[in-house]
Length: 252
Image (tube, rainbow, N blue to C red; front, side):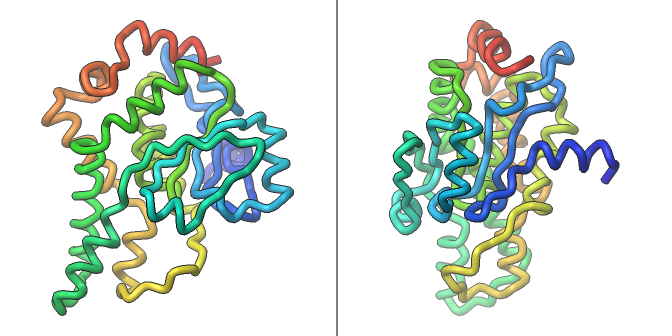
């Protein structure tokens, strides 16, 4: 990693005791070369383990609302209710571990290839089944431009696709979108709660990100919706006017 990149990463990654994958989407060059504003859009793993100092940090950053992509049981199992943060549920039910556990119970040994397959299918489902959740996030972003945070459990899959869509809408290059997506592999530290019956090589795939995951979602967007631009407009309701507005609010 170049010095420039590590310098930017130190601005981008905000170290917290209770969340490892908390970062800022600022600084990427967007539409007409205008950078995404710093300290406006944050992405993270879940917030249930934040401590007092972490909450102070969020307050300093001006974050007053969070958008939680976790499914119902996930958000109940690791719930949070921080007085200064208004939490909105945009639930997308998780399917990867469930899919793999179900196969595991059939007695057929699970392989890394099964895990890859499950991850890619999950990303296809995000587009086919859960696009309305990403549309809702954009609605909130347009309604109120104050700093916001969106997250799921690990802040990598549902959050990773949401971040990619936001950066696409802001005119950020695909190279930067990939770089942002893959940062999870450097930053995310899984907390060891919830022992798994799944094999370590399977878990390694499930708890990381790979290009083929996001590519699976983008392929559906391109093949079934005629490309990202069309998908943003037709499926997420981001008309040309809305995109202009989004850029006016979030680009420097």
